[in-house]
Every structure is written in C-alpha cells, then in structure tokens.
Length: 322
Length: 83
Image (tube, rainbow over all chains, first blue to last red; front, side):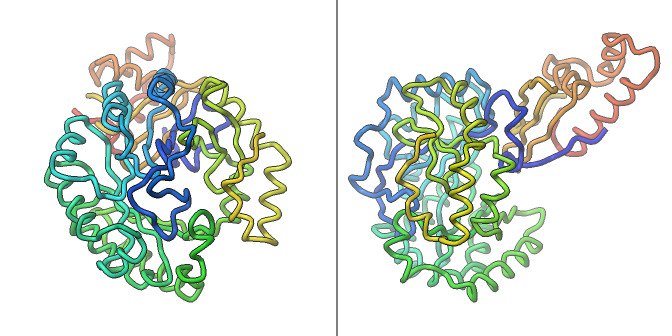
C-alpha cells in the first residue's frame, strides 16, 4: 500500500470534513513597522473590532472540537496579544499542534521556557537579512541582535525553530548567508518566496522590491542550499509567481482558513475575498461556505484581472464579502 | 507502537488523514489504513493488528492482512510511528 503525501496547501479541501490548517492573525498590533508587512501592522494598528477574550476562546473551542490538527498564531505580532500565552496553552493542552510566527523581539529566556513548557510545535522567527544593516533597514523599529538572541534563547530552551525570510532589493544577495545563519542557529526549517505587492509594500515598493535579475540568483542559491542542507534543515521556497499560484488554487483550494483579528475568514491571504465571520457563523458553517466561495465567479474574475494588472494586489485589504 | 510526536490523525468520510506537522506533509488514508491507525491509537499490539482487521472484516483471503502489514511497514519507514 502506498499512502500519498502532499502538504496542507496542496491538499484539496473538497473531501475533508474540516480544515487541516488554520492560520490565525490574532492581532494587527505590532511593535515593529516593517517595510514589506502585508498586513500593514504596526504600533497602534490593532483593529478596533478585534475579537474579545470570550470570542477568542469560543473560536479556539470550535477549532479543537473540529479536530483541526494544525494552527498558527501570527499577527501583527502575536506575542503582544494580552492573552497570547493562555491561547497557546489552551491549544496545546487539547493536543493541537501550534506554530507561533513572531518577529523574535519577545523571546527572552523566560518566555522561551514558557513556550517550551506549553509544548508549542515550533516558533517561526522572521530574519530578513543575514546582517544587522539589512535586517534593521527592513524591520523598522526592529533590532537584528534582539531577534538573533531570541532565536538563541529558543534553542537553549529546546523549542523547535523555523526561520522566515522576505527578499528585498537590498537583502536578496544575502540569502545564502541567511540560510547558513538559520542552520547555525539550530533551525530545522527555512521558508522564503517572493515578496508580495500589498500592505506596506505598496508604499515602499520602489525602494525595496527585488528585480527579476535579483530573483534569478536568489532562487539558484536556494536550490543549492536545499541540497547542501538536505537531512539537516529543510529549505522551503515558493518560486512560483502569485498569478500561477492563484490560478492553481482556483481549482485546488487549500485546506487552510485564514482568520483575521476581527474574526473574518479569508479564502487565501493573496485575495481580498471573505467567506465568513466567526461572530456570525460557526467554524463548521464557514468551512462549507469556503468550499462554495471558491466557485464564485468574482474570484476567478479577480485572478484573471491580475494577469493584466498585477498591482490589483494593492487592494487586498478592501475586503469583498462573498 | 504509537503515532510519532508530530503526527496528527483525523477520521474523514473517505477514511482518514495523517498530518505530519513538522514536515507539513499530509497523508490521505483509505478505510483499511484508517482502521490500522485506529488500532494503533487504541494501543493494539503491532503484530496483532493485521489479524484483528482480517477477523473484523471477515476477509477469507489474506488481502486485508497483507495490506495492513504493508501499511504498518510504510508508517515505520516514513517515521509516522514510534515505539
């Protein structure tokens, strides 16, 4: 017997009774104001209508009852959420597998020990640069040394580490060194891909977007590093452009829901379409709506229009309710 | 034998899914494979699982038994179970 393997993103949602993965942006508040942030997060940028504590835990209860096996908390910066540790504990106590996606600025030894005790599956830290200069330029208000120390603290506490890297015109050349740094810091996975034209990147595109001439050697290096680190650290990267990805998704929606801080549920991060509201519908109802929403002609039309106007992604935060 | 630390199992109408959350790989399971995983979760002895399934499904031949044995071997080979 052979058991076919795929990934949550490649697993068709059609036959499944519930999502396999929920990516929850728990708050839009962030201590940093990164040049490329697709969520336009930053200090004072929490949505005015974010889910309150009771609503948050009611949603988590549903996630666990539906046996969603994998959940991530991101933001904004998830660790600034006032109930972050309670939420993480709730998920892990119910045997959910939780990944925390953070900028690494709240990873002091005490917090890392707590994450270890709670039993999170992994902490993914954004390290967009192999040097202080590039990292600090990209992560406005951020500090390379703090983030690196945070990763070292995770390692010391025994928390599994993943590293995420967003390429720009001024850091793309460092990709090889960044992969090496991730391995040296003890990461077991490294993620990167193409930086999206949306959120803060719309305003900063002229000074940070990598050119296709830069993407060539960037991906060549990643192919080489994938081989170099085989069996030691997984190097994941999406070479595919956004349009190709979305055309594929139209026919193969991923078994993944994106939950926004106010409980709205998006089809996919790279589209503006909302298929549910956790304040009004149950997660199970939204899963049914999600399947149908992908068939809405407005979704295919938006993707078609992206072919002639790639800058339409600038409007991803103007949500369209299906 | 038990499911490995980072492996999650969920039953589905078609059988089930195993999700290895570290590599983020999803494995879709047919009803026989799903029955094997249920037995593993229940703590059944690995050596007894094929014969238990054979009896449960009243299989006069040895198709289910062989399928279950092959599946258990594959679970081990892929690191989806541990002792």
